[in-house]
Image (cartoon, rainbow, N blue to C red; front, side, top):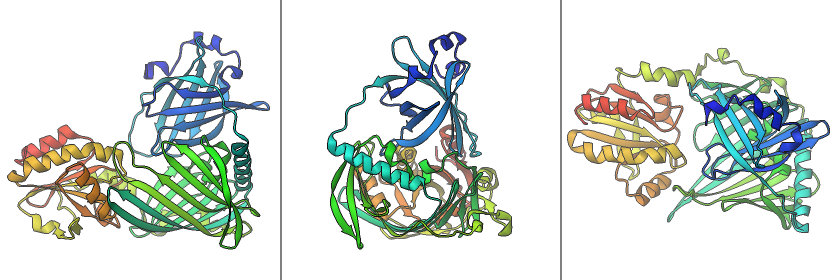
Length: 474
């Protein structure tokens, strides 16, 4: 029912006499969907606004709200997320359900194709808020309106993240500077754990800049940047249940503390300045994912929250030609061809037991590098196959290494929990990932006994088996 339902029969148009037929809240009947989990439709004067959520972990991704229009009598919504454009049709059914048919076109040069999706949704009756929840929701609406009303702003924050896996705890920190100029200019500088980065939204283009490697990723800018980068502007659209937990002083400011149950065991607490209605502190508590991984607790403290600065327009522009920067996406694509048959880039990393591993010392062996992370669902799915190759190929001269940018405690705990015996290397600053131009996870690299790259790719088990067979491993 996927691609065939993208162009629906004309007879269905007769069922859609009015946008009112799809007004309300709709829940996907497929609880395991990897697509849209819920959408709401509401009338605002002469406009019909659709709000959608997509399947994500630990909580669903908020797509924000956009306007629907009639297309051949059927409500149509177009979501422009920058990296993708999704066209969605909302078709009411005679049995009271709604059929959602949607398809995405990817603008990230990944080459991905979406055949289209068609899923049924059931209308959900809205429950009445308790007086306590209504009071909290009214405050969140005021906060959201404050952020949406900003003309220029500077926010500096310090984020501390604790990841808890079994008996292991890892702590990371990062500092962010967010600059905003209405209506659609944004700059976010991030330093700390991992690779330093700058994100610029210039009104038409999203630039992800990596100063240390002088590389960038270029994408079309999303229609509404708030959903992805400025989430407090959507606080009045949350699906969870908020409650006012109390009032506290925070760094000299009187704050109201709002606690939000976001579902799936995820909790959020916000310290909201009673004078400015800006968020001063944000606590986020995530349990471990059902498929494994670590629990995550984060605290974000806003050390600067200025809404009256004059910002230089040059802060929201970027020209890669000025520094002769290279496209990371292009480098990643070219690596599948340019690296194969060439000497593998040399690196020295330490494993989870703090033992040094130099690639050059492994000559005479076939080396498999699996760039992975505990946070990556596809990586976790691929690990059993990588572990099998490690166990079956070691006697034939295969050396298997995971390469992970996370704290070693997290990787060690995850591998121990699931009985994996392969060695994993610690690449905290993504140095090896940069050498191999890794831009998606997992990525697998095979290096032959002479030290040349024999395979570079992802999700190609048959092709990788063919290469292993040629190398005398399979």
